[in-house]
Length: 183
Image (cartoon, rainbow, N blue to C red; front, side, top):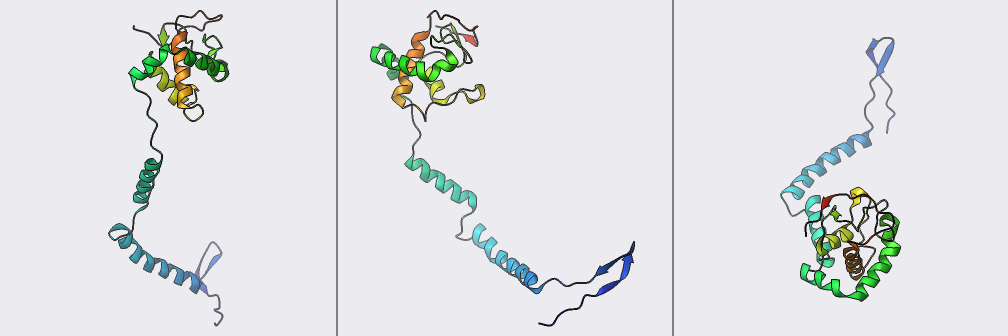
């Protein structure tokens, strides 16, 4: 391939002269190849058998959820029946002492987290709201979701124990937060 001499254009601006250099031929052919590729790619992906990224994403999410169905919490009647199980209350107290006491205090009086013994609630009172709060957590308030850390049975046990804490007299109770519990 013959060497191309640099040509200087006739005009100048503030003492700056401009070269008239052609683009490298590999760059020109790469550009032409991209244009030709796009002429085939766009119809194939938008109107032909090719799938767009969003379609591939939706398919992969459906496949994931088929293999990993979302966890469903027990119905209200089943949760309420757990309240009579003393072994479950004892297991919940043990787990609460290890996992929940750093924020709610050993006796449920509240430290960083709210007081669990008073007649006020932030997220609802009853087995369903308590279980859901433990399961999902309250990330915007700093409570992590426990659904990936504790088993479902352990979450139910902690919920039973927390339900039983109402009316207890903690050593240093935090001031009430939230709405009064309507029985």
